[in-house]
Structures are given as structure tokens and as C-alpha cells.
Image 1 (tube, rainbow, N blue to C red):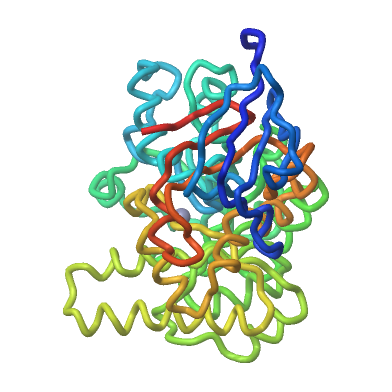
Image 2: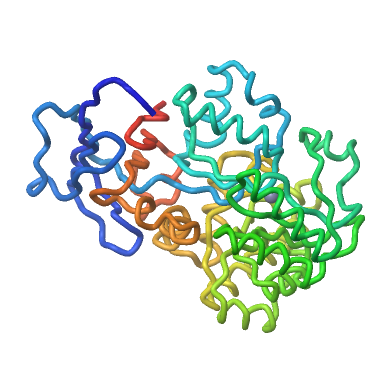
Length: 391
Ligand SMILES: [Zn+2]
């Protein structure tokens, strides 16, 4: 991104969470020069350049920019992304992502050509938005695509997905997407209308993606799907599966062994069950919370992910539900920052507030370590040193 001669920006007086594991810097200073962080430390030890734009951040909290590792750009509002008027597109990106501090998102199935066009408009500097990674179209079992009417009711644009039912087809479909430049591969392990994918079929896609250095995500509908996916060596399980009630020892043994990642998508279950009785809703969400708790207890990695596009953008409920699964503030912050940066190969540039790292930052009004609600009270979102959101 080319821009006018830059001025350094300095936030002064904030509590800075350098990483989830380090104790925070109080009365700290972050100096940003261009797209990267130039210096971080307490006020007594960091010199603010004389010509810097100085922003008083007293009482505020600064963390690394957040990642949502399970989103979709498949709603109708993103269709024809190349021609949506810039102000409208910017507003949509703000409402869905940047106003909540998200600076990087992983799209797990959408029309790749469209999502690529959307990303290009953000990367050219035409509209402010998060960094987008995408799997492009997810692979589905043959016959597994829901009917058009269902997709329309879900608010989705028509997206033909590659259908696979054997290893050769899986390999070919994955290769085609990887050749077209996607950042990972997504598979739907089973569907209402199609058979479940076999372990060999999933593994064929995994091998193809891993050969290209890209991660593989699987959407499971049951604990059986989770087990098959883990046996096939996938990197990220894209949902909990509350319909199965619990995840048994066969799954948890593989979690201990392989340290795969999970996007819990707890809010999704609340939303799915919103027409049902309160008690049924609670049981369903509690089952998902129990699965997340078991996953954590077995040393599995957790990446913040909501299935945004299928749920509302406000992540408040997801944070609260993650907390009720026993996650501490540090663990939730890790799921938003260091865990995805490590999972997706960006740990040297993203996920921490440190000199030399990308200036992807969230400035919050309060302190989320004492009240999680502060995580959604965003004063500034910065990506690559540019303010991409302020109220
Ligand atoms: Zn999803």
C-alpha cells in the first residue's frame, strides 16, 4: 500500500498486553512507524519521537489485532464484491469485522473469485478492512449441497461447491483450488443429503494441501466426523458437535497426540436453537461447552472462531461462553492473537505487541482482564499502522 509520507503514531499511557503470557505493561507506550511497531515499553523507557502523532491512551488497553479464524464471505451482501460502492463495502467490513478489533480473518468457504476480488480492494487501500485468508469453495460429499431455497433462506449467495466422494476426486478438487491461490482447504465431512467422507478421502485432500504448505479445516456434524477428520490428519476442526453430546476418549487421545486446533463456534448453537425451549437450548449449548472444556483439558489448541456470516457479528456472547468453558482471559486472548498466528505460520510478524511486529493493534476502552465485555468496546483498530476503525 503506497501512502503519503508517514508520521509516527504513539499511544501513551495504556495497559499493554504484549502477549497473553507476559504480564501487562502499565502506563505503557507503543510507537508505530509505518506498517510496523517501532517500540513498546513503559513510559519511562520508551522515547516518543518529537514529530509523532501522540494519542493519549490513559485508562485504555492495547493488544495485538484479533483474528476470527472461522468466517464466511458467502452472504448476499458480499456478492459482486468488485462492484459494491466503496463506502458501502467499507461500512459492511466495519460492521462485521473491524469495529470489533478483527484485523485478520480466515474465510472457510465462499466463492473464491468473489472473495479474492474483495480482498484485492482491501489490499489496494481502496477500502479499509481486515487481512483476508480464504479456503475458497469448501469440498462437500456428492449430493451434499443444501437446496437453493434453504441457501436463500440462510441469506447466502449461490455458491456451487466441488463434490467429492473418493480420494482421487478429493485430490483433484484440492489441487484445483490450491492452483487458483487459496490459503487452505475446507471439507464438509458429512451432510444431511450425502454420505460422510471417508478417512482416505479426507486424507487425500490433506496430503495435497500439506504438500503446498496450507492448512486443512473440516466441518464436522458429529463426533464420528471429528474422529475421522483427526485420523486423516486435518489441522483445524471448525465446530464443536453438540448433537453428539460429548467427545470420547478416542477423540481426546488424538487431541493429546496431535494438538489440533478447534474453532468452538459456541454462539452458533445458541442461534441454531433459538426457536426451541430454553431448557433444550441450554442443554445443547452446554454440550458444546463441555466438548470445548474436554478439548482444552487434552491440550488442544483453540482459535477464536464464530462462523461469522451464519451468526451475528457481535462476538460478546462467544467470549462469555468461552469463559464459561473455563477459559481464562489469557487463554481467550491467545485464541484471538498468538494461537492463530502460530497455527497459520505468522508467529514472527503477528499476534504480539512487540518491536518489529506488524502494527496490527486493538485499543480498548477498558481492561478486559477484569471484565471481558471490554473486548468489544473498541476505541481504535489498526492494521499495518493504519487506523481502520474508530467510532
Ligand atoms: Zn462455517
